[in-house]
Image (tube, rainbow over all chains, first blue to last red):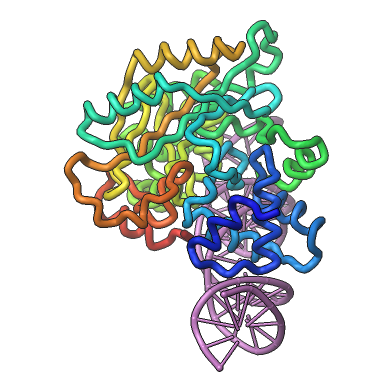
Length: 175
Length: 175
DNA sequence: TTAACTGCAAAATATTTGCAAATTA
DNA sequence: TAATTTGCAAATATTTTGCAGTTAA
């Protein structure tokens, strides 16, 4: 079955190579926010004949086409998700690194109000909330001193992905 | 005169070397959001005897101490600002890359409400708005297709800094 | 057929680190 | 003087690119 991403590519006159199709499929199937390395891993499982350079080229292309959005949850790697789900934001659990998506129309409105007040139209925005589950004891205060920009130098920067990815992903990380 | 950053370092029992002092001074004087390369440039002007490795080590240290916050405005480099100014957000002009800081207590409240609804306490958050000056003709629609995460692959990722920095900064960028 | 695409390895960019020498408290 | 810190250069990590060969339309 043809994925939405494939359809969009065809509409925009891009060649659908086997590799491109595989990357599109992997992205369509992903319910999380994989980085390039993880996309490459999943793609390789479906098709041996794919190189990581092609994955990089594909996500860049898809992003340029507005099919994908690049995210930065800290950890030094770009992460990706399809644009199909409409505007939404992310709440990152600082204890576990788990990512929760949420929407809020009121917030939407507020952003436009604020931008308007400054004389701007909103083109896009990003909002990431770092939080701790209510009632969770703070056993790790050192972790969350200054996570404002990157979640924290030493907080888990992983995701809602299966353990295997999580661990491998962190191992290869430079921070 | 001793900078706030220096004072905090001493309070936390860190040695104040000449280099550290210079980096602290440069950061205290910065009204913008310099990256490491720019910090190194400004520090070098004050003191020849400083290497970029030391600047990297200093900002990492300061960030761990909660004295600095790391920001990501796209462009592949981390940018820094002192934490002293209290919570505020950033509006990035997608045409010029100029960064405008703003606050909004209502937004503050809303974030706590939203997090609470999901069962979380807010530890920190980041909000970046990408906007276009009202009335500015859209001569560059290609630029802003999918800037949700990074401002845009090809939008200026510079700042409110002097032209000289802006240009050098972009030149060395990989995107 | 041909313009677009891929793989590979090398380059570019950003950041970290090992170690010997220098410096602060 | 002892523990930290620095400079330098080399190592790592992520992403991009040149080029020759392959492939979709």
